[in-house]
Amino acid sequence: MAPRVELGRRSLLLATALLLAAAGLSGCVIAQSTAGRSVDRGALEGIVPGETTRAEVTRLLGPPDEIIHSSREHDPLFERAFRYEFRKARQTALFLLIFSTYRSDSKSDAVIIFFDERGIVEHVGSRFDANRASYGAPW
Amino acid sequence: MRIAPATALPGSFLGALTLLLLAGCRLHVERIEVGTPIPVEALRGIRPGVDDLGDVLRRLGPPDRVHYTLGEEILEYRTTLHGARDLRFILPTQWIPIYSVISIARSLLGSFVPSSGEGGEPLPEQGILVSAASGLLEAAAGLIPLNISTDESLAVHTRHRGGEKIRVIIDRRQGRVLRAEIRAQPTSPYPPE
Image (cartoon, rainbow over all chains, first blue to last red; front, side, top):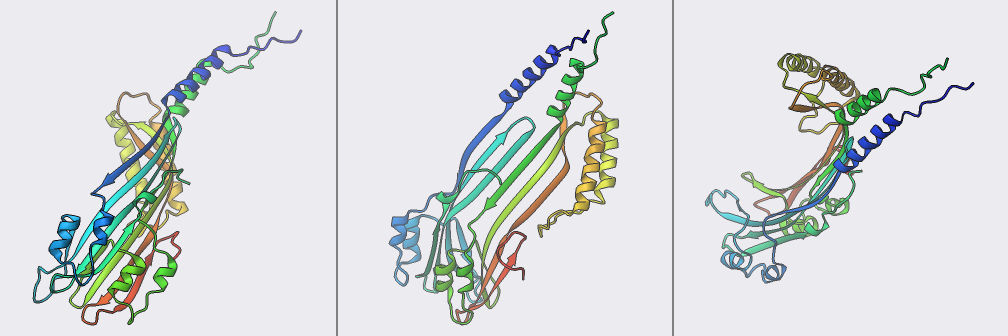
């Protein structure tokens, strides 16, 4: 007579309960964070090298996030450049009980304005990449 | 007489094993990127002795940092890329004797584990093996049931850190680019200096 095989019903129920608990404890996170003030592109177009003064730049774009001093020999506190930056970071995370992933992509909009010795705009550099920050998997 | 077959593992054993596997370890994969990479063509288009600050700003955009020496204006551009794959164990820490053993063992084994440092070199295989031994030691000590606080310990981990740091040096008197320096990390498309 063939032996009767125990199905292990209790083990099956326990494993199922644990799997359900693991599914309930998993999580998915999509988040976005920003730092700084966004740069007004319209106001930036009003800045003309050779014409716009330092005071006009401040009026158009607001106070800078960073003032860069060039430490010139005859004027150690000469304000050589203003820097503005707006940073955006997008994060994607997945939490399963035994496996987790995390990805963060940080890009920025940045503007730098260089002044000459008279305080007139000499050069302008800008980059608008903040919206290129992306969500996704870490691989 | 009916013989009870031993074909099924006891449920309590399966439950305990499942709990141990699920609660004690975790595989973690992560990737962190900061900044916008500079296109290679834009960087190689910089002409020392010819280009000025305006040309650099048009080709490369605004720098992340500007600083000065007596005769130079230095523009810095930075991007970083961090990637990691970790196998982590969650271990109890509140029982002082066990935690002391773990701490001593960890410090002894830690002397064999090279650190990646600021340069961002990837961890070699020797480091991985020692870290695995450290993690297993801690996991074995952690099997004794203890309550409340735990610590997450790396058992096996691979990490790499890449990116670029680009410096464009401009002569302050002549207003022309003197040179461009590139410090490339592993995984960068630029050749190392």
